[in-house]
Length: 435
Figure 1 (tube, helix red, strand yellow):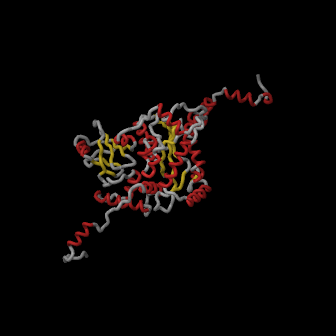
Figure 2: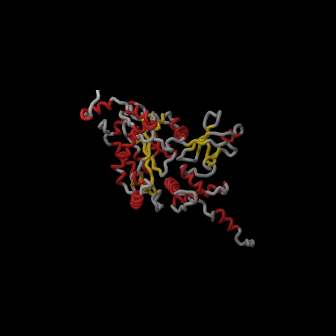
Figure 3: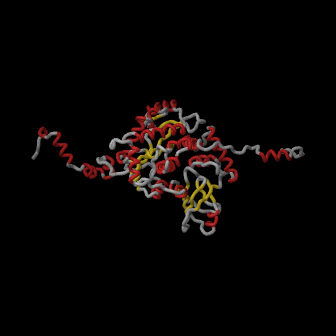
């Protein structure tokens, strides 16, 4: 029966469209890939307890910060967070100027490990209240290059975590972290000096220049000072009520711990093998070399007598002093120590070492590499760094922020004690002057 336009009501059309499969219709028109981006999920993801599904992402907004107190120009930093889908608690955080594989590994390590092991010394007193740890069964991430890199995939593989890549333009598939960003932005982040919303990041919009200029003028915090404000904000959010359970989020998480035990990696070598970047260099007589850093040990020297092919090297992005070497037909990993530098007293991050190594000329002899490394490290700490050709302020700022956590170093001056003794011995001799 054909109906006239005046006889069809809005309720009739609505009920009729409920019976149609809109996804199948759109898939037949534009294909599965674009249909999946347009048709939204309408039911809640099936998760029943904490640490079953986690979500990682970087904020769409940012804040202008000083790398350390010696720098005069603030730069734009992102905040990376990890959240639990069921309870909604924030599991971990990191601050970076350029998201990368190392920052993603550092972020998930802060989500998994107890906070007393990952927080800086000045913030470890918050670890008692932030008792959130453990690996997830599923982890949802977006399609950013820092999230789908080979290093990150190997980390999740060694933790037996199923990695879920969300399609483009489907923020609803990881809605917990997206809603978390909106809540933190509206209640906390927007009140901090130097804050820039997502619209201010657009480089093509001329209004963004004014927003960024105003934020740069208001910036007055270093990265370390920002983290001191960020951790209490995270604890306050975890204590807020869950919209569905009407209880504090942290209580929902703690109740699940009594029912589902935590899964934590144990052992120093296991932690270094999991939360690390993977390289495949060739084993040589001098050991292995990654990122212009050479590592050697007695076991590697013995292995070189029978094998000289490629090996797998695990490098911790937070501490470059040691690496783990996995060789074919060798059951246990071999621990090798850094021979390029003598930095047993403090740890150096990979971003810091990579930036400093790029500033040292290749023609510098190996025995003088450590002297130049400490000199560049002190230059970064003092804020007297001059931008060289091929460098960007972003990489220097990330290295300077990490250098602020390193104790102040002193490299040998030209007038050392041995030189003074030699001058005293030669005093009064009739040596010809150099022409």
